[in-house]
Image (cartoon, rainbow over all chains, first blue to last red; front, side):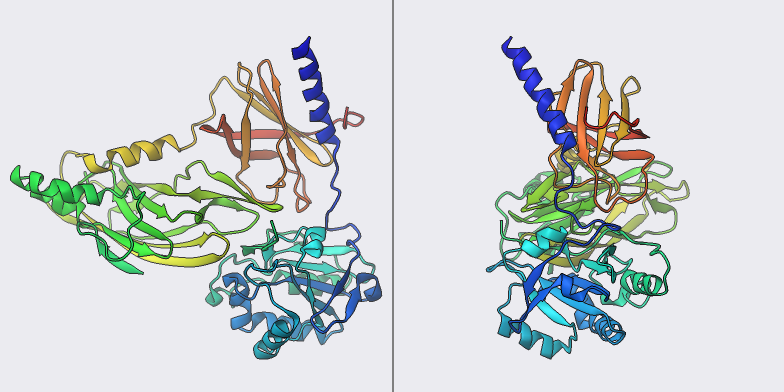
Length: 205
Length: 304
């Protein structure tokens, strides 16, 4: 009887877990999760304020070799300049917990942005990782694109060369640019979900 | 990073749990020389151990010689510092697998890495697949028939890998090994335990009598295994990225003939999967390569 009860319990647990849907997710084609976050200049941003515009989210850790690949080569800054120049909102997001690699205070981040000539719309500071977990951000970099209707149209890597070697950039296909070009000309994004590559996001345990 | 003569004490820090065999070789040398087998020592001592960042790396050979028209088994042996890891062919949520680029003389061609069973390395909401402590990546090398007895063959490989603990460091090394050509194979006794251990971590082919199939629901795959015996513990490692949520638990229901395992679908999976390929690890040790055909769930069956 005891065995039967235990078996019943396991079967129930099994199907309960089967039935558990995706509670938190940023799935391409679905509405992007709404958020409120503070930037490195103390300004608060709500995703809903940017309805009508494309929004790019770029997960960032200045110490990660994969992030450095795209910043020390100037690749990320070129993308920021090009796309913000076309009216797109670009948020760099830092989800490193205090004491982990990539964690910065607001003044430290502002110094870094200045030094690197980075031109995002703003840098969102997310030391408790809530925005990172909301979007299930895994790596630095990890890129997302939200369309003017608030729908997620891209989730994944920055490009198709998952290495930390800057010499790979010229021969790479940039997925973010490709997705923005397609979406902005009214086409469906061909490669809308790719494997993000890089260091893991340094969430607090 | 410094090159270390494998037959001498490495300079600097020496990992206490090191299993690198050349140290044993060093102790054996006088004995071998006395027996007139010094060339064996010469051959094995032409391997270099590289002190890389948080790891020592060396190219090892199952044999002390190369025999024409016979396969040679080489290995890249990593001894990793505590808390550091390298990655499996599918690294999981982050990371990058090691890459080996061989520079081999004509007549030799290297096959693909035979990936050992990985571990699931979980931190916060993320999970990677990789290796800690001590790992050998085996690579079979085809040898042509034209090599001449007594010739010396130089094997070189450029390796690139990512090593991570709390932080990640990309690293690389060029390793080499010289082996003489001979007519009969001779196993390197000093590497015997290392290769035997490496062999045990390789996945086995899927047994003919076993069956695997997958039903694809809205949010999950249910992998059914029929193995003719109840399976009480199993873990699935997907060969392809972005098919399942790596960090999700894999609830298992034991059945009289095997098990059913729930694999949560990746949010990144936008197209249907027809074949789910991966590694099934039973009881934490035995591992099998599995390729399970996927059929969509029939309507109305979801969540019953």
